[in-house]
Amino acid sequence: MVNLGEVFNFLDRIKMGETVLVEYSSSNYAMDFTVLLLKRYAEERGYPFVIYDNLDTLYIIDKHLGFFGLKDAFSNSIVIKTGGVINIGRVIERIALEREPAIYLKRYEDSTKRLQDKYRGSITVVLGMERLFAFINDFFSFYEIMTSMERFLGSAARRAFYLCDTRVCNILPLNPLPELENIASTVIRAKIREGRIIGKICKSPKAEMMGWKVEAPITELL
Image 1: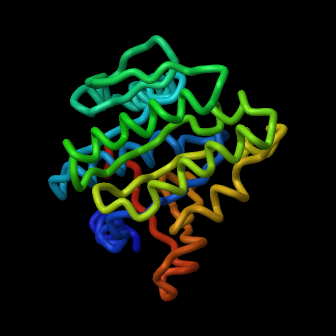
Image 2: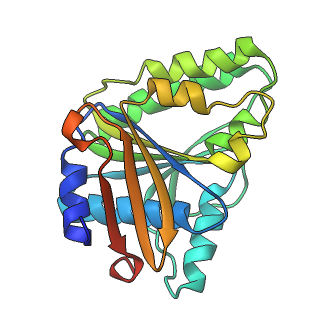
């Protein structure tokens, strides 16, 4: 699959209720163009596009894309912020970070349930997961977060894409990637190479799709 239309056709095959883990390396712009691709897909197909922005990660993406000549790419995107102080997009809710994960998770789950009712069928993107896990240094809190994520697996109101920087995750005291890969119904490894965004499907509920590669020129997104 070597063009944007074919990548969109692949995304059509990801079912509502799936949790998709997108792994990338911070050494290139894979995160930035993955989010932009998902936004373009949601617009093309007429789905609500919702971003959970943890600790101002969306600000970094917005500024990076600005260097490519794309200004205010997320000005109309629905955004829920956890921590951070810089508003990008239409910020409709804020979830305060807490030292006690159970308090934060309750607020997160309540917010998510409200939004699922309001924006059914959404493409939901969660940014900066590795930043949240950097605050976690005990197994009890670690598995509180994982259990909370498990509860949204199968929710027919959305397709959720969790983006994680593997280079950061691999140096955390508690690396979340093995558990996230276990929870996710689909796992995609994204990278940029020779002006193309490339995704390798490492896990999928459709056996024939495992091992597939999908790619598109980043110029088609700009």
